[in-house]
Image (cartoon, rainbow over all chains, first blue to last red; front, side, top):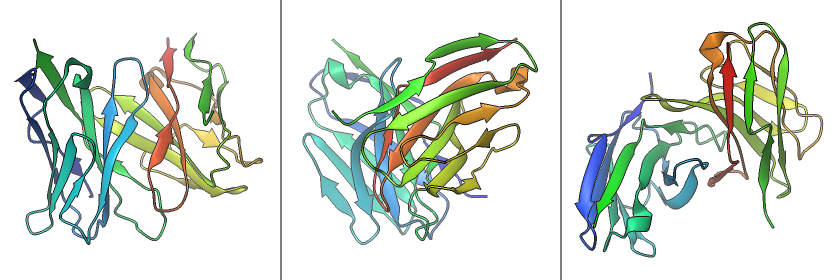
Length: 114
Length: 111
């Protein structure tokens, strides 16, 4: 079936360094992807999205890269800060006709070291 | 303020005792969903609704019911809860082919 996975379940980075969180997806028909951040005790929060007609999108300190050839998604966080410590999920939408049937990966925990 | 609210936030109950978790949004979104989150499994969709009186099963619908009588509300009903439904539940809303906004979560324990 359709699945979204992450290569690294945990990631530790030094404050100020850049972070890269990876995600593999299995459904080549997926054409919309989102990265979410979930802090302890809270619901997931939208970070950035990308549609399949793009291969890169930038936000404030974050960049998402999409490689459709190998079905790979990554989230880059520049100058990682303590407030970036959280679990990060990628999500794909494999049913573009329905709008919001997202499939989520298991998540990567990002720990920022002082 | 745009909000998705869930009640209760925490609930401990016993097997077989019917319960309802409410979800309400003030953003006039057509689309609402329920997810459960379990360690190592990420978020799995239980049910979703594309509009009033339109609901459909997600990936893990067994043991759950939903209703969408009003646009703003989307309650999750467990008619006969079992221990394997112990989980963290999230309601989410959105419009069309865009991001979802999540509620704060409801932690349910079924003894």
